[in-house]
Structure formats: structure tokens, C-alpha cells
Amino acid sequence: WAKQPGRPHGWAKIHSARDVSGAINLEWHARSRTLICRVVTKLGNKPNSIIGDFVVYLLARHQSRILAIHIMRR
Image (cartoon, rainbow, N blue to C red; front, side, top):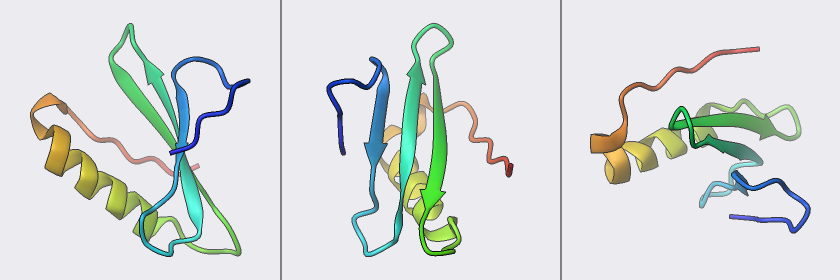
């Protein structure tokens, strides 16, 4: 979990607890109650592991508050 002083309110960056190279940038839209996540990986690694860890965390801790999870490729 990393917060930078210059980062706008509602933004955060998290890293996987395991040795997975990369991070997830989070943005919370309070009005629509939507969490936007963007995965950034390094060294050509695929985002599968870091996305999987995050979805497991969300469902384990916040399942009753989640209406839908959409995963889109760019």
C-alpha cells in the first residue's frame, strides 16, 4: 500500500504480498461507488497472478459489497 503526498484523493497503489513483479493502481469513484484498478507488470510478466491475488482478497473480505467484477484487456 503506497500513498504519495501529490497523488489525488482516492488513489492508491498496492503490490502483491507474494513475489509477483508489478502493482495495481486503484482509483475510487465515490459517487458511483466504483473501484477502478489498473495492473502494471514489469519484465514482461503477465498480470494473471497479481489479478488473481487481488480478486481472492476482494471476495474474501468484501464479497457482500461487490455487485460485479469486470476484467477488460487493453
